Structures are given as C-alpha cells and as structure tokens.
Image (tube, rainbow, N blue to C red; front, side, top):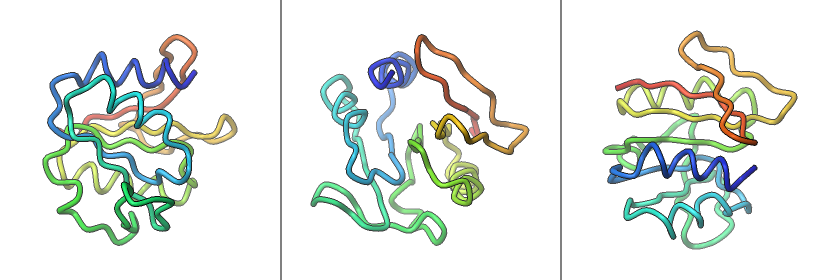
Length: 128
C-alpha cells in the first residue's frame, strides 16, 4: 500500500520543486521513496521531530515559510482534529493536499475527493 501511495505522488508530482509531509513521526517510508525517486525537495515536519531531518512545526500554528513554494502537502494518518489545519495551510499556500487517514477516519471537506489508487486509498484536494 505505501509503495502505491508513493507511486501516486511520483506519477502526479514529478515536476514539483517542493513536497511537504506534515506529521512525519517515526514512519519515513513514503518520504524515503519520494527522495529516491524525485528530484524535488522533500520536507518533513512534526511537532516532536524524531530525527534531525524533520523540521519542528505545529500545524495548528504553522510557520508558513516552511510550506511556501510547495506543490503538495501530504499527511499520513493525521489526528482528525488536525485535518482542518492541514486544509487551511494548503489553501493559504496554494498547494494540493493529500490526506491518508486511518481506515476508520474520513475527511470532512467538500473539496476533498476520495482517491483509490491500486491498494492505496486517500483524500485529495487542489487549492491552486
């Protein structure tokens, strides 16, 4: 599933200069695949960075400079209360947003459309 999720991003954002993952935590498989496959700058953020490559940021009170110039912002299994903040940042930056929720969660936004790509299921919206 994670390879399929990453492959969707690779197929659709191969020309992106910058892609940001919000809430990277300790799971870096998707970001690693993207770094190996794209020439884009892959930026990871988290409120509690687990290593030096992750930038400390609180999506509820974001430093918009981190997200500026992004073609895509994505988040894997964010807490539901963070989803409106993700949407707000994507709107302000003018980026696409992909949210890969837990299988029991949904995204409450009329702009977010459910995408089924191979074995990956996620929500996507464009705020460009």
